[in-house]
Length: 184
Image 1 (spheres, helix red, strand yellow):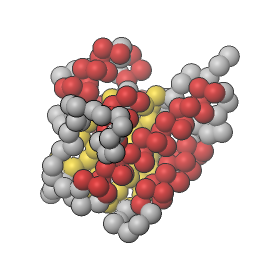
Image 2 (cartoon, rainbow, N blue to C red):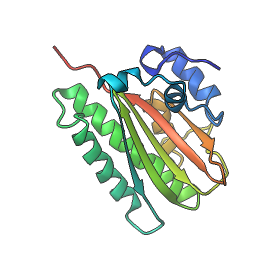
Image 3 (tube, rainbow, N blue to C red):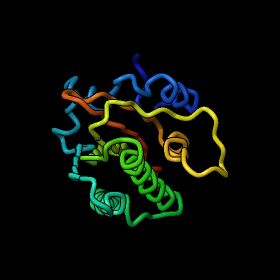
Image 4 (cartoon, rainbow, N blue to C red):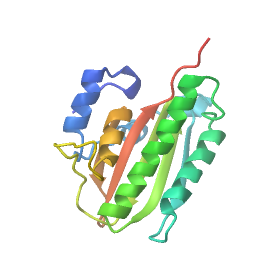
C-alpha cells in the first residue's frame, strides 16, 4: 500500500499506518532509498546518516541504547534543542528507543541491534531481535496496571511504527518520527 511520506501524513493516515502497516513488512524509508531517490544525498541535502549499536542480553542494554541514541541526537543536531518543542521531541525519541529495547528484553530473546537512521527531519529507530513473534499492541489498556505500556507509548508518540520479519529469523521493530520545525 502506498502511503504519503511521513511529513505529509495526517493524523488519520498515521492511524491507518498503525492499524495496517504493523507487521506488514512495510519499510518506507528503505524502499525510498532502494527506489533510487538518492539525488538529495548526492547534493548533500538531507543526507542519510546511520548508526548501529550491537546489543546482547547483558544487564544495561536499555541504558546503553538510550545513551547511544542521545549521542546520535547530539551529532545530528537534535540536541541541544533550540526550543521547548525540540527538547520535548528529543525526550520522546529517547523514551521510544528505550521502550523498543525494553520490549525486546522482556518479550523476545533480547535485542541484538539498535539501528538509527536520520534523513533530514525524519528519524527511524529499529531494534532487531531473534524472536519471530511480531509484537501486538494490546487492545485493552489499563493505565494503572504494570506492563503493557511500551508499544502504547510508541503508538502515541511515533509518526508510524511496525515490525518486519528478518531473513534468517527474528524481526525488526521500527518507528519513524519527525523533528519539529525550528521556531523562527
